[in-house]
Amino acid sequence: MATATEQKTFDIPKRYKAVVYDKPGTISTKIEELETPEPGPGDVLVRLTHSGVCHSDMGVMENSWRGLPYPTQSGQVGGHEGVGIVHKLGPGSENGRVKVGDRVGIKWIAYACGACPPCLEGRDGVCFNQKISGYYHPGTFQQYALAPANYVTPIPDALSSEDAAPMLCAGVTTYSALRKSDAKSGQWVVIAGAGGGLGHLATQIGSRGMAMRIIGVDHGSKESLVKECGAEVFLDITKFDDKTLAQKVKKVTGGLGASAVIVCTASNKAYAQALDFLRFGGTLVCVGMPEGDMVPIAKAFPAMMVAMEHTIKGSAVGNQREAIEVLEMAARGVVKTRLRIEKMDKLTEVFQEMSEGKMQGRVVLDLQ
Picture 1 (cartoon, one colour):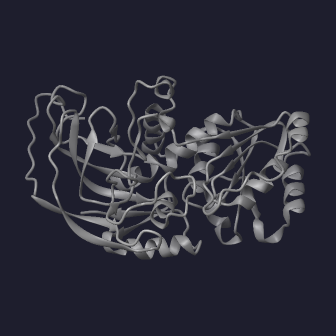
Picture 2 (spheres, helix red, strand yellow):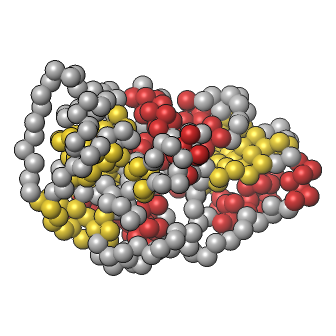
Picture 3 (cartoon, helix red, strand yellow):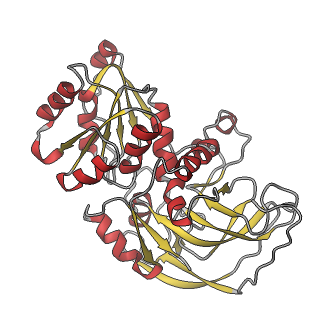
């Protein structure tokens, strides 16, 4: 972070480029020029250089998440994994922890009030007054963005901006989910969707950062990636039916089952399979958000839940402390996103690839 004695200034253009959803309900984006905003009280103006692309962005763009209260409007700037440099401070931000020239991140929760009951318990993801980056609030697929000075996330010096971007959603979300699972070091954890953007980070964080024993479940084309990320065992979903897949998990875990299952994929089928993977007292953590009509978790029978003392938890991203911790983990080299860089004008193609299930790891947009 910059010292108080440094007086940095930047030339700020009057207009800049942003990628907007021009036809919500479909996979379609276009680049537009917008007027550069002035930071208000308590805000900072961030010159974004990179933004990760998340499956959640696609759900917002396509209006395919039935759980969202309102349809996405045309002209929405998406994105919620932004990294950039603070170029200007708004009134009242001059004496805060953020200085002009600092490198910071903007997350899915772009603003949390810090005063409501969830915030006071460290549950930023369910803040009653939250603003969501890329959904009825300008996101990070743009070159400049406003953000609250007290809620941007500092980026460690040892971590590149392209590596930091995915940690602001995929990284902190999976780290928080693993913590909420209550699984201990040395215990088995199943990661469903282990080769995806969230899953390959969950596999690394769980195995290398938290000393858990990871079983990765995904399509066979992602086996090498999942094993490189630290999974002890990989199970190809195309080679099992639901019954034999559960039997294989039980066999690998000595007949008991896993202590936790983290569902990172947006698949109702993955949730239907998950409870059969658990040992007694095990926990299913819901992360992936299936699209289309909302469907209950199959096999969540009360009698079995009681008999096996199973727990089902939801995990809505992580809090500011967890974001800082997982960024430090990445800075130390414990976790590294498998990513490729694309330009802003390639975003529609990236979403098409994501929609077809062909993407391995993560894509980060270069906004420069």
